[in-house]
Image (cartoon, rainbow, N blue to C red; front, side, top):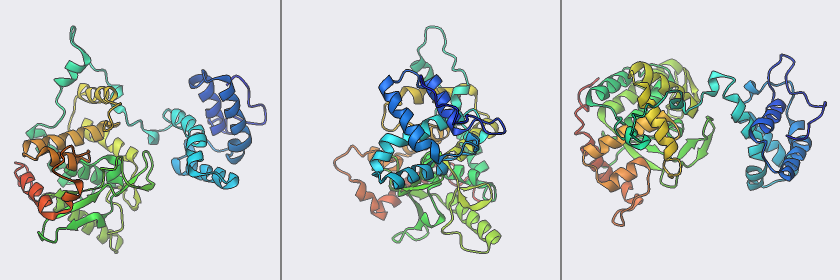
Length: 375
């Protein structure tokens, strides 16, 4: 900022850590320095008179989280009698932008989900980025898929992040959809007893947070996704394991919990961190494959359905490939992936019919891996 916040505001804590006030100063000096002067004046007065007085100068930025930010915004809203829309449009970005920019460099817990950018994508001379990406596999080979399935099916008693990743692999849902799931979202079909599905997308989490919200990324997010027999048995073993540890029903607990804290819901960043470990250390994925995913995501960021995280990208692409191989119709694939259905012959509501879901289930049973790991 061209103007100074003055000596009344400290930019470091007593221990020398960057605080929120310091992150704001740096953000406008380094990142947002080209903002028009009259806009800077508005921001300056807002920080000095409204935001700064509510935030302790002795709290390090690394100790902030999104719940903390939401509480600050709620205080501003209550003190000033503001509408939700005013908070979202005029205040939220002033609090969250400096935090998000600088927290990336301060802690592992602030893991940048675009981890593919840490790898270099080699472009052969004379080739384009697009043609190079096109030649790099976007889903597992059958051998790799078998390795992934066996790994996940062996993890029913592991930490919650791995379980969440396993469910992502099973059903191809997005990270925030997986984080929003509880065990009670697993339902048995009435017309086809012994066949199970998961209610996905009715509740999700805010990105980078474990706070629940209603609905998903698009109006097409709510859907029912079937579980193959070995997938359901895996989740049943997980439920039995948690109940043996807690001595109580786990139906209201999150499927994807944080470590072994069964009542603490994962955030999308938690799954990103676990996804990075899985692809690098379990699947031994090459750096250029991860880089290709990150590059393609940046090229497609104007698309309504582009993914922001390599973990989501790979697991959804892998599931989408299986849907295509197993002869699901375009309508069925679009429903399953949470995309808009192009056909006028089929409505999303048609998939509430369990016979239609059962038809998808029967097609997915053709997967050569569906009986390879019967545990």
